[in-house]
Picture 1 (cartoon, rainbow, N blue to C red):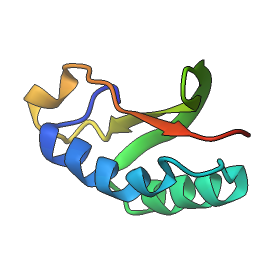
Picture 2 (tube, rainbow, N blue to C red):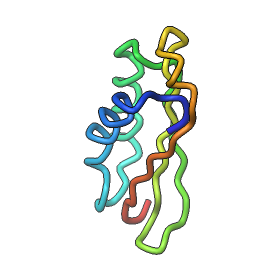
Picture 3 (spheres, rainbow, N blue to C red):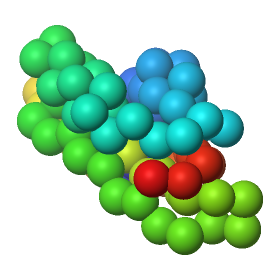
Picture 4 (cartoon, rainbow, N blue to C red):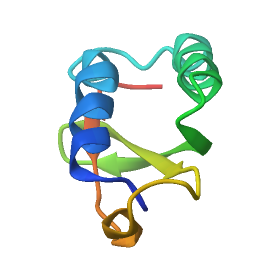
Length: 85
């Protein structure tokens, strides 16, 4: 994840960790991203898939709204391994 505070990163890991180790349901993922964006905490939520040794990797890109704490500008990464597409 890029541009999120550690507490937001933990929240998103909990929310999107449910996709780990399962076939990737893109419709469900997009619905969850839309719901999380609608919560008002983020300007942008998106995703990227990539090949991984244990299936398909999923990276969630998140950017908090500008009113977030200054420490939240440091990038971080969150990846989930999903099986197939």
